[in-house]
Image (cartoon, rainbow, N blue to C red; front, side, top):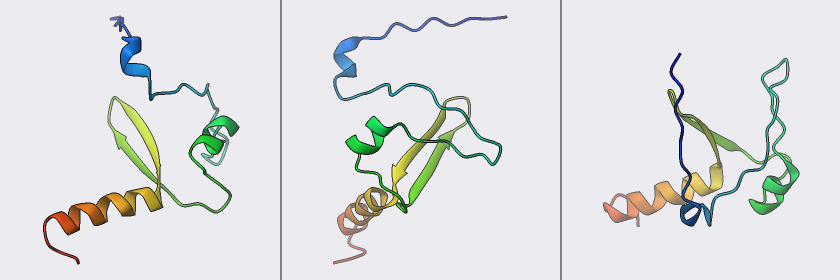
Length: 81
């Protein structure tokens, strides 16, 4: 068995947060910790985009933020006004 040890440079952690752990329920659901929901203004009914990278993990992004990002890209390449 191979173990990897990672050193965390706290200077790079200024905008990063650890909110704790969550458990996956029987139906595959997780509860986003209250502190994270408040910080990122996530409320009931909000749509989330689930992104992932094999061997790294998953990330949840509010769909509205992903749309804003996509629109900036499209405007940058002249596909929308």
